[in-house]
Figure (spheres, rainbow, N blue to C red):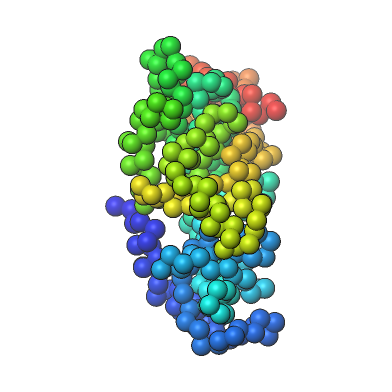
Amino acid sequence: MSLTRRQKWRIEKIQAERIARANRVADDAQDLADNNAEAQIGLVITRYGQRLLVESKAGDLIQCSARRHIDLSVAGDQVIFQMVDKNTGVVTALLARDNILERSHKLIAANIDELWLVVAIAPHYQFDLIDRYLVVAENSNLPIRIIVNKIELSNNIEQVKKDFAMYESIGYSVNYLSVKERIGTNTFKEQLNDKAHIFLGQSGVGKSSLINELIPDLNLRVNEISAKSKLGKHTTTNTTLYHIPSGGDLIDSPGVREFHLDNLSNKEILNGFKEFSPFIGQCKFRNCTHTNEPSCAIKNALNANHIHPKRYHSYLNLIAN
């Protein structure tokens, strides 16, 4: 049974206090107003420049700076901080991460439990684009699920489910939703409890509507964070963590909602097709590209119906680009 994020916080409290003690020596360049301020564990809500908005265990939002020797922290990070005065603090340590999400070698978010790829009936889903996202997730070691939105627009939902059966057959979970008609939304919300999530997908598939369904008071949250962090107009473009009222957290990152492959090598693309993994290394030639070579284990698997033809063609298209 997996631990909730709050349980992880409690388990790491002892470790965090040790880290805090190791960082008690004040940085000469950072003169704390109260050197005896108690070290606390906090959750990074958002970052802009060198400033952080950190949520305390009590739920208070604290504007913090970070000591220069601390690695860059982002939304989703757990940190140790100390209060400087009533409203501000200093981050003194960064706790170990479970994972990170990067785009073009830029750190976006940390400690993500699940990515959700949102596709739709309109604009109609494209298998090559879906596979691009899945390849990125697999190479980042991040679990990813698929949402098919706007199902109220489909004239043949059974064909839609048949299309996505190839993803379900290799272990990807697929949810069929209509945010507009509120079909499947309650069941979907239950899957988000006690986890941190990021939504991805091309423009127009309904990500914003889905986020507003999960967090009806999102504008109020944005305004609160803007006031606390003094980020102003930058709040809506920053990667920010929001608590979902029905349970779980949403890390909303507008900059990565539509990200694609970041110069992945052919080997990384190959490893991103997880159903290929049993056959990698079984080809006759060590440098097999799995295209035209004889005695290719992946092509043999394709011919034996162990690999779906659409997935194989997506692989060919990705290595060709």
